Image (tube, rainbow, N blue to C red; front, side, top):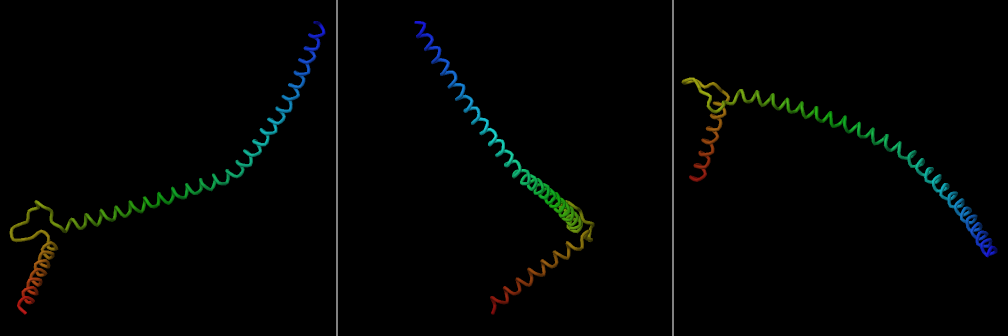
Length: 132
């Protein structure tokens, strides 16, 4: 029985030694894989930094362009509002009263007269064409 326990202990020791050797090889391979992964990440970061810098520059330039476009739009809106306010001075507003016998807005009267003349000429030509 002692011999059997000695044999089993010896087999157990051999199994433990083999297991330790296997673990050493496994850990060595795992360490090598981690080192390879670390090198790949380092190479990736070296390639990524210039791209990120270029992207950052592009975003900065696009922001400048957008700011300039917004300024231009604001300038156009200001010019439009200025022209609109000037034009509105010459166009009579609804509900505005006129003095008796005198119009407040001479340009409006001119536009009405031009429209009337245009309608008269149009009616004349229509009548002329139907008679001939």
